[in-house]
Image (cartoon, rainbow, N blue to C red):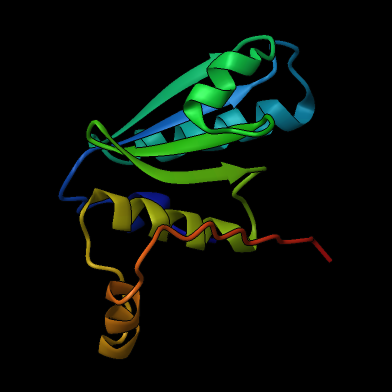
Length: 134
């Protein structure tokens, strides 16, 4: 089991998780919200904003989400562009905590070659990672 408090104990900057979910609670949304609350409680640098409302196409377009539940990650006031759909639990929790560490200002654990290739990108890249439980 991952020690969330230990993984997020030394965040250099603030991170806000903006959680967009339905106004009708389900077992899934309750589990997701509990996990996000545990993550936010693990560090004073993490804030959780819950938006449990009916779908509002204009608001969602302004925020840049395509469906709910969704988690938008911001670093301070800067929108990182990171959107997470689904429950970041199980195998995905460690990766999600790594995303929060990177958003807070920790350098990502990338090789010098990977960093050079990323700096060489000439325009924004839309990257989607789709995970299916087995």
